[in-house]
Length: 98
Image 1 (spheres, helix red, strand yellow):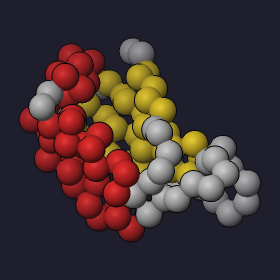
Image 2 (tube, one colour):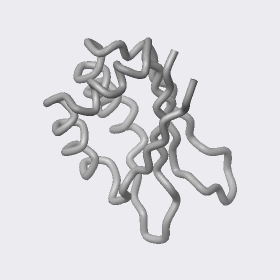
Image 3 (cartoon, one colour):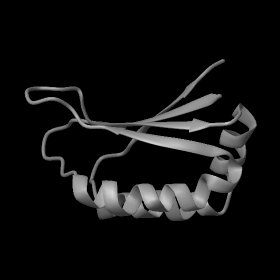
Image 4 (cartoon, helix red, strand yellow):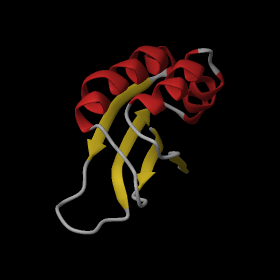
């Protein structure tokens, strides 16, 4: 199993539409990357109080090559292009090793 973590850091003046992210963006991610072995997408929103991130999403793929293929695919442009629809923050991407 391979893991890709997408973080949306909390910054002053940020917006983040949780409902859009949950209902629309993650569906887009699943459609774009499912063929590359995306097995699950776990969305984590912070507990109340100051937190370093507005959202962390853990994407699990069957293998590292699937992450490579997903990120290089044409569908990634659509995934990235959708980001301004729910936030004004640039996401940080973390690839976990084996």
